[in-house]
Image (cartoon, rainbow, N blue to C red; front, side, top):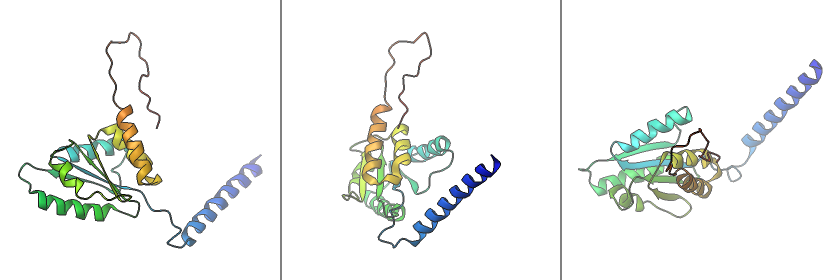
Length: 175
């Protein structure tokens, strides 16, 4: 029995080493792009607050994720330059998702300037379920992360009109 378990462990380690070696030996064209970068561009202090909540929910501050707060006194041109710099820094090859708080407001209008098909996408009306989905699926590419973020936003909104007598799981938390 012990020998059988030892052989299984040895085979698993061999597979891991082989996969690790194979991934290192791929040419740059064959390598899958890394995870999608995420930029939170919102009215102050909401962007930083979302990052803190995400760190709490996910267990650590997400990598390739940044917050940029917009103050009432900020100049749109200066903000646009900051957004461009952040997008460039966050793009690891898989693109960037920009999340804003309110459609039509200054953060949204500034972010619109950075949208590029297959590289930079913009979502307004950000929520925690939306951001958690985006973070969870960002290794699958920009389109999938965007799709999952939108579905997380839709599924993360519900209404309870009555106080249920028993506790029930009315939220479908499955990704």
